[in-house]
Length: 372
Image (cartoon, rainbow, N blue to C red):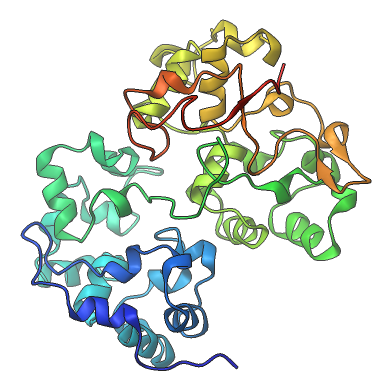
């Protein structure tokens, strides 16, 4: 049994914080924005045993079940854990739940509706009575695309750039924008029975759709647009928002207006335009019909930002690039060096998946002669 000593460095950090920053209603709870690996052992025990986080759900904002609950909906054990980490009802409801577990009337009583209205929300949106599929336009915007007024509204419900953009705090040694989900690149007959059951019963995979990436209907959706059971299944397999949207969906279900900075550079480098991206468009860029070997170094970099690699881009079944004797895929590794024919310098101005401008390219990753 893990020790749950009520004294943690996380609580100490919170206790030492100054009064609330001017743009936020409460002082930022630093502990929640600290990667799991950097928490002390006591805090790790608390977030796992009392709040039900895993390392993956802690390192990503807004996907843990406990974060869907307001303070008064937490169990006594969960509230005890939150208290031990230094949270109060105010900081939990604002920074963790963002008042999503409140009714519109309750939001009005607390003076919160003005902040959501500033982000385009209406009571009909909140109560799911708006036109089918209608969402506030800001839901498809990155922080850098919000106006100053919208950012102030987001601050009012304790959003700032990191949690609005759902910053990925998981370690990532690869040259891909997010950690490589190696578990997805195992053939169906190499999966254990539990994984096959999750893939079949929760996500509607078949052996054929599993072995041929991009053919499953689930992979046509973003992580947040998966059905409740499918999203739970994806998380059970090891996915979260960023890894699913990048490696499984490749952002094909994003609105054009959602492409920003490095994502927009990637899409446009591959030749896409807004008119081509629409559902009604009949034209597609030349890159869509090229095999990987015919892509330019810049196009390969763009495809890499969208989490493609040669075998996926070319539509090869997993069984063609899996070494059954070694028990691993032969395409890419989690910490493999950057092939010399991928020019990440196209992201020098925008940055690359959280890496600052100037921190991408050949000087960051060790280039090799791998890749065709």
